[in-house]
Image 1 (cartoon, one colour):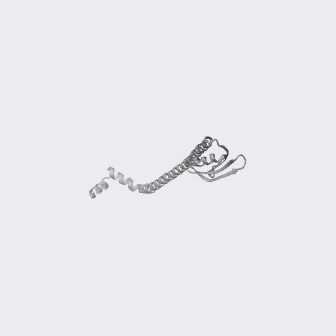
Image 2: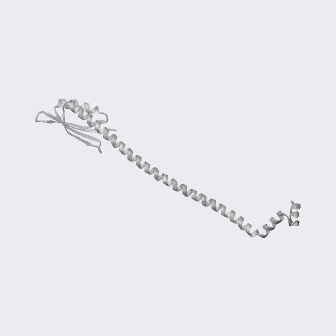
Image 3: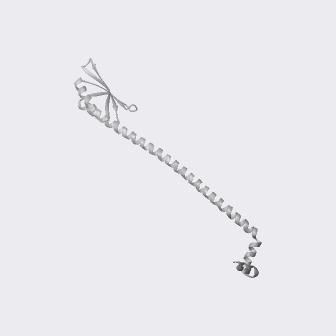
Length: 170
């Protein structure tokens, strides 16, 4: 190595001597280039990483908003489905009640639905024998239980008034 350096400096016509001469003359430019390279590369990497994180955060927020919108849409669809189930259930129960009363030729005077309270109020007049046979039949309807039953005797026409409050179960 020592001989190579001596040979390079003693023979100024060689390419290696010319390279060392340029490095020696332009040393300040090389130092500036090295310093800029070593400071600029980490800064570029930092800003690149920062921009990637920012883009990822924006993408994550957009996904979160999309998930919230999908959740709201799903909730509304579930509510509509539940409403359809409730109306189907109401129509089935209503049809079953009317069918039972029609089989015994009993006229329903009042049939009220209190959906918020999950109750049905039935008022009917007929002979006591028919009304007493209907009471167990109403209990056979699925998802229905008695909450309150009252039978009142009407003095005209020898009839009995049935007031029943039925509770709708899930």
